[in-house]
Length: 475
Image: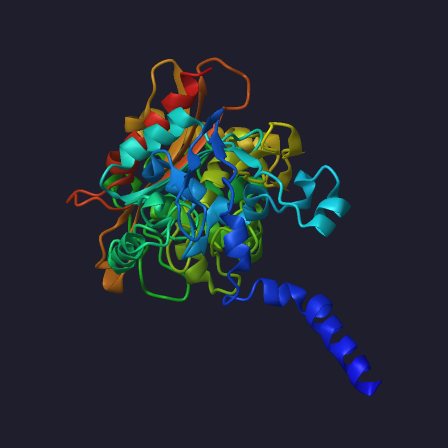
């Protein structure tokens, strides 16, 4: 009797309490076999699938295929019989593989009968023309693009270069393993999603955040009035001057508009100190900095704005240096929040989940992330960004028939700033004369282009322009 009870307890422990851990044990091939014993659901851009499935005739009945896989790798991620799933392929794996209970007509019976439903589809928010413009603009450079629809948070483009073909290692053959090993050994890290998973010092593009903080807190009330910023500006507690990249900044009491148009470090560093650490932190966090759980639904890396600094460090952080670092996604959220009257929307990459027959499983609704500033303050920041494009360092982003606002950035990094600078541009655009929310906001970073003259206006702004044009041309 004791042995029978012991057997019953052990069977219950294994089959009930340990079932989930055993199902997902790396040594258990059952789930992998189930995952690939039927065609996988598709990931769609617009109405077009950018994925597929093909019979293998091997241990796993089907393997994943990709239509122009390198173009959308930063969006789809990969689904590999050997190496697992990432990005949308990973987050939405249950739906795509058909084991999501929402796909069942009779969930309880399907569970008892262990019936596997056809895989569901994931419709993304990506705009094909914008994605193509982003990838074409990046070309062979090392960099990334994130584009957002400001009013909704829908991600219109998500590009990272160098890229890779996720179909090259989707199977389990020797050729797939060789392809994986080559990618892992590549020092250019083609499998790194630079738009979501890499942070960079944002340089002068962060001055948009500083300007918003200065205006929101009343440190500056008129963008055309003197700010009181001294020149030279000596970093508090030090004997070090905060230098500028142009002599146009080398005068005291410049206006905020002049400081943004000419990208004056001395003025913006001074204003950051006047705003103060706590309020600078608050404004940065309104745009997504310091959020370790920013999901789109794929998890983005945490962008950083230090919460403990002395005044000189606050000054440097206010011009996008020191320890300040951001993903292109978060810098796109900065531009989008300004464009959307101060309201930052939660970025989303997935528009809708459906069954294989097209019936809806879930529709993603726009959601507010933070109210970063008032509409009145946002209007002043938009004017600053417009003046940067019309009269300042962002002239190469001008679009005929459109109003464009932007901010360039060239961020030094490395020991004694010895690394090749990062070239940044963040922007938004709308048809000229329109009083509606701009339909697109973009962030571009070029980490390494091979160019000797590295500037945000020269390298990143033209790419942002092409992405914005792709969206404007559809309107």
